[in-house]
Image (cartoon, rainbow, N blue to C red; front, side):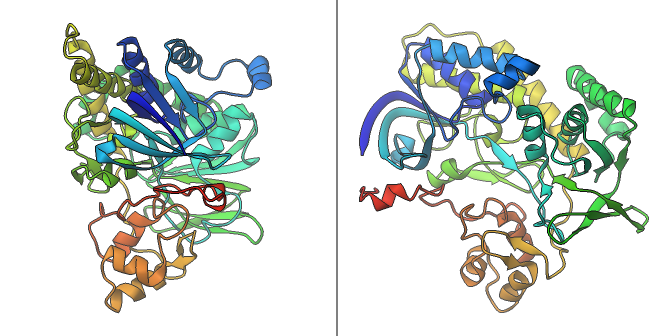
Length: 451
């Protein structure tokens, strides 16, 4: 096991982590930046292969510039490094090389978790068929590889993310058979119009996407949802339910369904951060102050890990957390005026609150019994209901009785559904335990001592 030290460890190389690492390094601290991916940037600032960049241009030039600044600042960048555990309020981190399995231990004076988020999926009959994917996967293929996920695509779910995904698919030649939005965000009520007008940049961004869709003859079908997918070896058709109760079926060779994003909070919860339900009542979030400080001394959280608010908010929150760490570790420094950053953070928080109102999540407890809920362990909604009915009516009891949540994802995908099916609070989640991510087999077969 290798051991190393740093003033600050930043976990996550996305927008929040990159902005934070840059501020910390320029402030004179030794910084180690850890990311499970082989490249920096996270999901938003990820970069195309060199040959595709040469042919089609830089997908996110701002990300390329930011990554270059972080590299030039002297940050110790460790990509391909999994943080699978921590102790001592985050001052000791346990890592593993994702390729070799070699283990490491890093000791720090402060830790910033900028672990981002994952896509939220909700089960429905047929959702495990090949060709049924998340919008993020379709966007990755379209933007990074210039490949459409299918020739005839149905996009469904809820959230503003569906719009750029649809536009990216059109750009690479896919045909959008339907864009199915569960809610009515593009016919907002009077209470939402004022909030939208206070976010002119985001409003203009949404307008550009909608105009692009209109030019291609794609209409956003609001108030509808996917009921089921059909096919044998891959998806071939999808049932779409309308508000009036009618159902229509569309032929397709790809179905992209997503319901926004879920914060990746395993590390803060593992370290005992105080949490509370988010405003939607669907997630347990670390309780943080205006600078990202948690209830655990020396542990900070920034970006979507602290609540879904988008890339711009992530960058601002990363900078605020970094300045707070600088004040903590270098109190002799001249204070920096942060009023502008704080104002922008508050404005972006209001945008996130508006998005929560415009794109509420559907009920999840009415799934047919045969619907598979836990894909890792193959557990159906009926099996979970039966376990709850026979006395295993709490989240962890149901997990023990059915194995739901015991697979490689450790319940990150299915935990909120299991909670709903057992009648628990919608924000309930499985406890975070080490390892919080699956370890490479090499970490154990080579006889390394795991703490």
